[in-house]
Length: 266
Image (cartoon, rainbow, N blue to C red):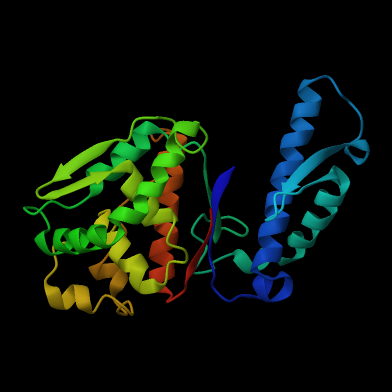
């Protein structure tokens, strides 16, 4: 289980297979590879053409439907990605610097370390008063809705810690539940929302005056110089969640820079 996202920049691959079509093929390929690995580790040496697994889907009316998914079907569908990979080289939306790098994923459960890191990035009234004020306004609007996250935290599926980490920022009290709702439960990131989110988490410089903040969207032509991306993902130092979160913020940055929405599938 994961949070999937895509910088929905118009390109030949998306026009050919569709955003949903590419995502389905990427997820299917990853799923096939994981299942093959499980079989191999269990000593099953059958060719993958003979492998399959059951998938149970629960419909809105509560009825369950079980399907048998063939590994060969998933891999055959994924083959349609290969002829399109060349279009990803040098693409301005390729956040992950790989074929279809505009598509990314944050895997569950989110680690306690990464949640606390997110809280530490937030502005205080002394270091970024205007951004802090914006955060306070946003939180007041979302406080009641974010309470719904409390019901899923104890399940041990979405969060590593059953405890809700907290940090006080002057008059503002923030928690991991607030942050999860703010980042992942409000739907698509339009460029204006991406810009404000980048400020909240100090992914771009935020010692700005009101005019600079108001004029963040659309991104100015010299945004790379005036507002460089500040977060560095390091797979050797960051835990998995933190590494993936930094990649997500990179996707938001590219979405803002290219005036492109970043779509979530939570």
